[in-house]
Image (tube, rainbow, N blue to C red; front, side, top):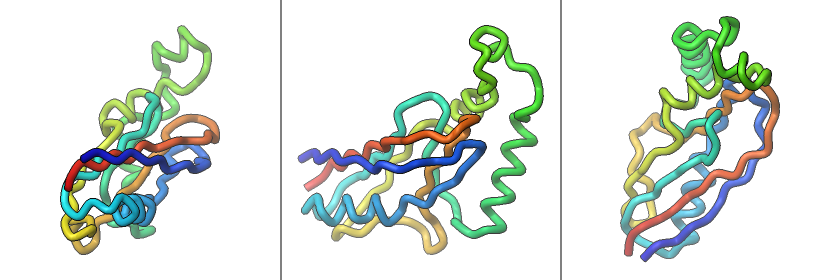
Length: 138
């Protein structure tokens, strides 16, 4: 059986990291499925979904690591073509990917003790985002 729902949020851009674990957990519970997989996917090319310990120090470490890997202040060919200044956000999102799949059992996400599901907006401006949560199970 497949159930699809959405998480809507407003993000600030510039590596805004939002904990969406509770929203995904609620989707699992409301689905009435007891066991399966939760696929969490963000459409678009400037955002990602991943897991991390959602703790202030780790979050800042992740932001700084991403900035070192894909700096926001260097030229990108995308910017030269489109003049929108968000070439770095497309590269960042491509490296981290747009989604993840998390198993669940007894209507409980099977995450590690310190593991949360996070949405990351890399764009260079605030955006309204719609995240897809698709549950497959029984």
